[in-house]
Image 1 (cartoon, rainbow, N blue to C red):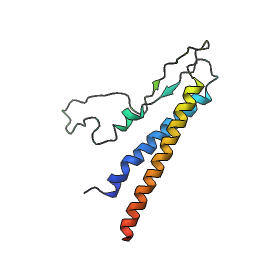
Image 2: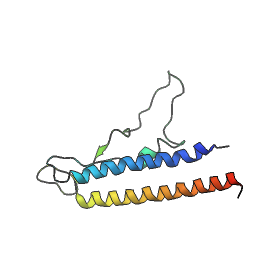
Image 3: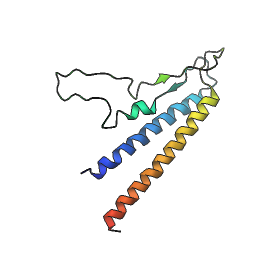
Image 4: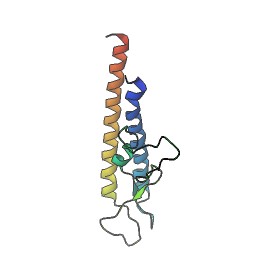
Length: 128
């Protein structure tokens, strides 16, 4: 039987990751006029797999071989621009604003879903 913590930890991880991505995207937007600034991003889908039980294989013994399947959350990738800028800046405002808006909407949806789960748990505890 799953504990309440197990049921909610995935959503907490999702919110943490969405918040981290919002910060990265906001930094990109803030540096849109900075020469040679490189737009950065993380892949939510790749990162959330690290929190999921079906994610990367974990080692259980010191002699097991560790398989590094990609970047960690601290290692962000650089976005390739659609149109190259003369000053070396790779931030494209339309792309960044769209990504930020979509990520913010998904953050809000996750919060609403999490609130619903918490309300159901509280209702069950109260016996309603």
